[in-house]
Length: 114
Image 1 (cartoon, one colour):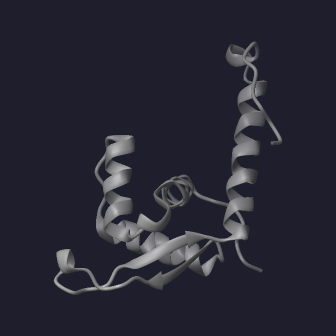
Image 2 (image 1 turned 120 degrees about the vertical axis):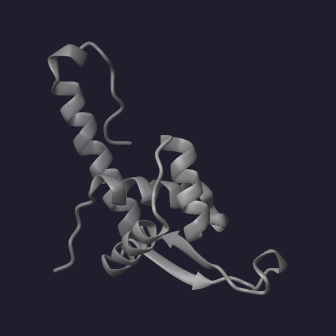
C-alpha cells in the first residue's frame, strides 16, 4: 500500500507545484520555496522529495520543450494528481481541526471541509 500521508516538506513542495502550475520544475520550485518561506533549500532535497511524491502517486511529470535560456536543455515539469490533491485536502483538514481545538485559538473560525 502506498503511503498517503504527507510530511511537512512534502506538503510544502506539493503546494508550491500547485501554485506554479506549468512553471513547476525543480529549480523554480526551489526558488519559490526560498521566496515564500525565506529559508534556503538544496536542489538535491527538492529533487529527492519530488521523486518520492511521484512514487507515492501524488505527482506526475513530463519533459517540457527545450529552451534557449537553458542552452537547449529540457525541464521536467511536475503536476499534482488527484491523489495529491486529496492528500493535501486531508492534511489541511487535519491541521484545521487541530487548530480549532487549541484553546488559545478556539475563538477563531476555521473553514473545515470545503
